[in-house]
Structure formats: structure tokens, C-alpha cells
Image (cartoon, rainbow, N blue to C red; front, side, top):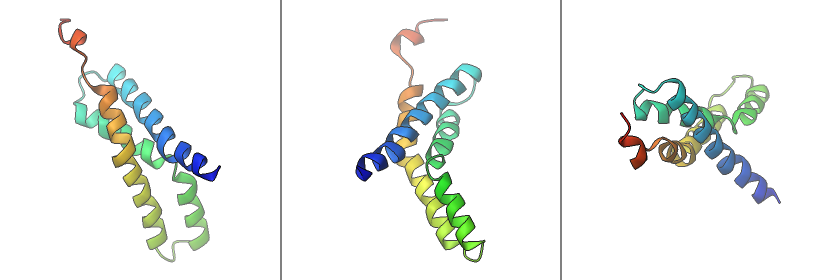
Amino acid sequence: MSLLLIVLVLIVLPAVLATVLSWGLAARLPDMARWQRVTLAAVPAGLAPVTPGLIAVWRAYRATTLVPLGAVFSLGLIVALVVGAPAALRATRTRPEQEDKP
């Protein structure tokens, strides 16, 4: 059961968030470069599931050491790179029927 929860929180949630954020950025800012849309969608999507962990580590250590805080933050960036970026790239790719429109 815990494995299912981990899969949902660390894989499905960031993928859905990155997809929705990249679609929203494409709709609101169509002139933005694709790599900017992917970055702006993937980073918040990767950090969203680890935010409770960041808050818990901050409360536990009270900034006495930055190693645990950096480890949890790094996990969020890894999730953004491994899960969020491919989802955002797939969501922002150009379809052939869209290229023909003026």
C-alpha cells in the first residue's frame, strides 16, 4: 500500500501537474520558448510533492544544518527532472495538424 502511495505522490502527481502547467503556459503565453515552458512547468511540479517534507525538515532542524534540507530539495529537483520534464515536453510538443494553421 505504501508503494502505491509513493508511486502516486512522486510519479503521477508531478506528471499531471507538469502537463497541466505546461498547457496553461502554452495557452497564456504562446510566444514563450518551449524550454522555458518545460522548465517553468517541471520545477514546481517536482517540488510540490516534497514540500511537506521540506517543511518537516525545516521544523525539525531549525536551520541548524542545511544537509537534510538540501537532500529533500534535491529529491524534488530529481523528480522534476525525471518525471516533470518528460511530461511537460510531451505536453508541449507540436502536433502536425497545428503546424499547417497560419
